[in-house]
Amino acid sequence: MKNNNFASKISDEDLPEVTVIIRARNEESNIANCIRSVKKQTYPKDKLHILVVDNASTDRTAEIAKEEGAEVIYCDIVSRGAAARVGVQASRTALVAFLDADAEAPKDWLKKMVKKLLEYNSKNDKIIGVWCRVYDTKTRTAFEEAVSAILADPARLGFAATGVVFKKAIEECGNFDPSMPYYEEAELAARMRKMRGYLFQEVPGVFVHHKARSTVREYWKQHIDSGIGAALMAKRQGIRWVMPTVRRMGVAGLVVLATITVALGYILPTIFSIALILIGWMWFVFKKIRYYPKREKLSLKAKIWLFALFWIGIFGDSIGFLIGMIRRKTVTLKVKQRGCEHAIH
Image (tube, rainbow, N blue to C red; front, side, top):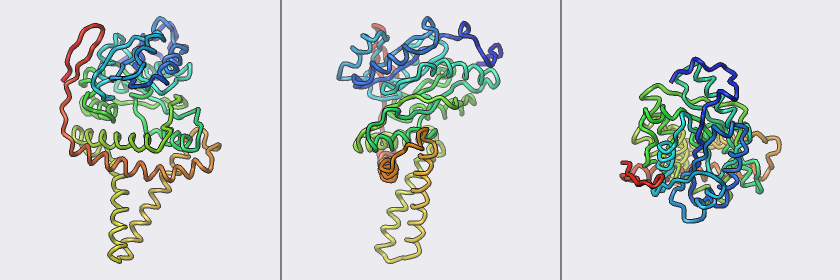
């Protein structure tokens, strides 16, 4: 994977072809804007391919994507890992980029990402992918503003939302796991590091607009899914790869412990548990505010919502993790792709 021929600053003429993979399930309200943002990229148009993976949508997602000029393939298993796997297999370029269907990229996103990848890789051939941070630039409520602040934390998202990767490196390590409904990029990144020592690097100063969850119910479901994904990853790669989720479960455990000790009348254990909970609570809020690009404009209501979202995330992740540890599921993936259907086990 070494690219010693690439200088730190590569000309547009030397940029390689890249396929932007957009996974979409029931995204008829977002997919057009996402595709249009890719079509507006400053990247050479003859080297840019847009591939939408319709993940068993029941609305007009695929139809709209075709109207916007994107190539559309289909994945019948509702799984982020499955859709990503299909997209990588269908791409014909050395580089693959990923963009969520409810995201919109600034016009210089792809060029900056590809150039940085080539630069990093020329210096260290183990760096085979780059990613950038996201936040919602179009928030309408204090709740969405708070969720956007959480999104902006660099620990929140991986390369499958905004990244660019060498396709060969993904294939060498077995591609995405189709049974991963969430955490699919984290699981693959861990596998790539263990198998080949491959690394991913953040591109500083680049942000992608990513639509924030707009209701408590959506945010709760996202964390349930995240917890399930973390559990599946722990089964495959070991518990050390999901320590953030384990720490959040620890906070939930402290709440249970504090409740029990209060009921039993034990004062010191109760004080100790509450102190740890408050420290974790405050750390979470200040960390999110620190990473938010528009932190100076973060409203008081949004900051209050951050305190509430801490607990929704804590218990959502914990419950999801327990569900994922219990769940046993084998996936056979049937994919209709360019007129032919095949199975991925």
